[in-house]
Image 1 (cartoon, rainbow, N blue to C red):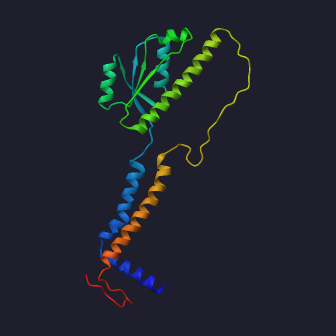
Image 2: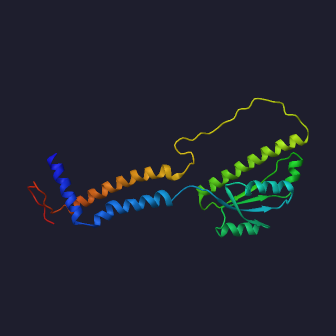
Image 3: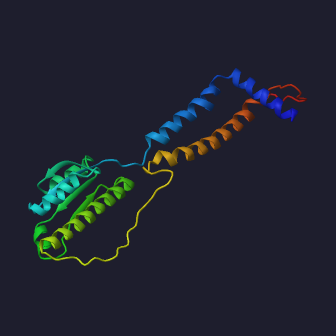
Length: 220
């Protein structure tokens, strides 16, 4: 125990002699924690998108309103051709594009499957995957609302039946913020790196130092 205390005293003396260690041990980890934990975030709050409506009907406009009214999407531009969509994606201005094909409303009125095309900028795979999930969520909601409305217009009384629904409840991180689970992991990573760094500095700088109680001194 006495040897450990003497080594600790020696390390604090070395810390006082070399002010550069203050930046390496304290300032550098704090900067890394802020940059890695808060600047390098994986959250996608707003998806910048464009819309290409080739159908130009009331149903297609209702679908566009679902996207524009969503908190997920920001419609930056309404394109008229595919070339405009490709240019916006190639320039990196948008992340997603929603294309409503011709005969979209006709296919719905004929009780056929209507197709909506989603184009995503895959240069950032994580963001593209999240945006694709947002698009799917809006389309599912739009399809359910449209089916309910069509049934009511036809005067069909739906037979009451039991339903099975699922509700997700997220503990400890309800908003799914990446900082909440990234920062503790980064703290552990930095502690491991700083420990190895301090050990290396102690071996290099301690070569030739004399501390109380030592019987040998290695030359520098």
